[in-house]
Each structure stands twice: as C-alpha cells, then as structure tokens.
Length: 117
Ligand code: HEC
Image (cartoon, rainbow, N blue to C red; front, side):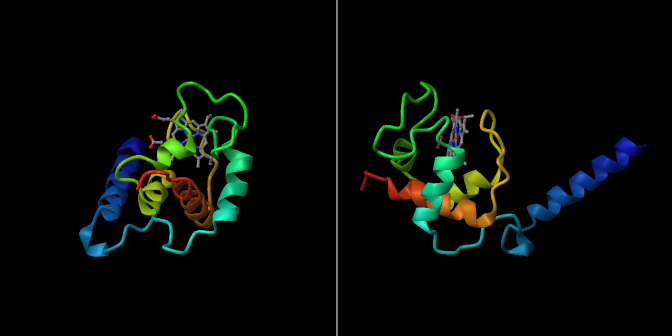
C-alpha cells in the first residue's frame, strides 16, 4: 500500500517536471553570467581528483575520465548544456550537491577551456 502511494507521487512529480505548460524546467540553474574564477576554485576542490581541470597538468589523469578541455571541445558544447548535465548526478561521479551558482560557474569555467571554434 505504501509502495503504491510512493509510486503515484513520483509519477505525478515526473509529469509536472515535464509539463510543457510550465515553460521552464524548475530544476535548471538560473541563467546568470558565470564567474569563471569561482568555477575554477570549485573545480580545484571537487573535481581535480578525477579530471584534468585545465590545460596545465595537475598530475596523472585517470585513463577513463575526460579532461575538462576535451569536454569543452565537444562539437555541440555550451554553457547551458554543461549546466544541465551538472544538474543531475552521474555515476561514477559523486554527487557533490552543487548549488545553482556552483553549477553555472563550473559550466562557464569548463566552457572557457574550449579550443574548438
Ligand atoms: C570520482 C571521479 C570524478 C569526480 C570527482 C568528478 N568527475 Fe566528472 N566525470 C567522471 C567520469 C568517470 C566521467 C565520464 C562519465 C561517462 O563517460 O559516462 C565524468 C564526466 C564528466 C562530464 C561529462 C563529460 C562528457 O561526457 O561530456 C562533466 C561535464 C563532468 N564530468 C564534470 C565534473 C565536475 C564539474 C566535477 C566536479 C564538481 C566532476 N566532474 C567530478 C568522474 C568524476
């Protein structure tokens, strides 16, 4: 019985999250201008253990973890796409419970490393 109630509640909130009537998806980070330096500081604290976070080497990267520069260079990359990607947790990455500002700043910082046109 309790399980049935939980299932109904999840279905309702999923439906609300995808309702085109809402116009904006409620969990997206705000479209503020990213502060690149703050993003780099957060990356140096939370992401450096797995990713090469800039073009200078910060040690030996794990073989199966893309560098931030290579992530930035993906063909259809953007600050918005990175923000959306960082909004949801992704295994094997730990969920560091980033704030909206941290997400925006990290996305801006990663995108600032883009070498592709
Ligand atoms: C425990 C190791 C680990 C940590 C810590 C980590 N990542 Fe990752 N990250 C990964 C791995 C592994 C992948 C590749 C996942 C895949 O290909 O499915 C990845 C992928 C990504 C991608 C997507 C790359 C793509 O495929 O486009 C982004 C963006 C990213 N990480 C950002 C971050 C940020 C920002 C932080 C710090 C807040 C962080 N990661 C911390 C392991 C980690």
